[in-house]
Image (cartoon, rainbow, N blue to C red; front, side):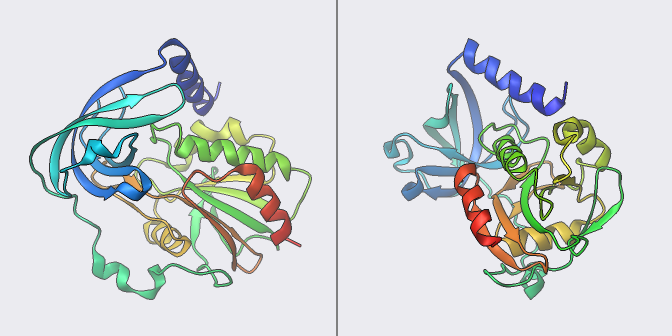
Length: 279
């Protein structure tokens, strides 16, 4: 059984047997987003759940974050429900230190600026599951729908959800030979081709139009692709990974035709959009 499928099965079983699990968490507030009912926190290890990373937490009540400020060190509860997760009961315990950003000067280069609709993505290179070099230009005239994932993502509504949606799209376009669905891991330290093959190999088996690429040894390429696509990630070296997500559709000449931020896009709607954009 594929590790990814096992992971999803564990989530499902966990949800069925225990519809609400509460974890005690310690962390530092990174961003407050009341308009989005969200708070971004650099948290420590959550025992029995996940390693340290910077991630967004949903809120159910804005009163929970009244009086909180960016940089506050907080203790709070992370609730894992049967269909959603959220944070609550924040207690400020001191002034923390924000996670250090990547070298800002490094990304001032236009190579790392976001590309708009119609603009060209650089011809970056990665490794496929057989450790062979692949470039965006090696498309044989195909369109490509590109998403970002990493195997250590613990949240079912993030990377695993993106994989499930790609599965839907790959099946929907399986009979067409003019589009590929590519998932790129930005975890260049952990997600080697062999790790990705072990994790996703059986999942994409039988799909000629569904690929998984590793960024191991191609750090600059994955930064370029992520930045030009309009998403971001950080903390790989510190094993304290934070990220935003975005999926893009590019044409045969690497021009951006469509983009879908985050992980909340609906696969059926994206399928319709792809069909229209490919006409």
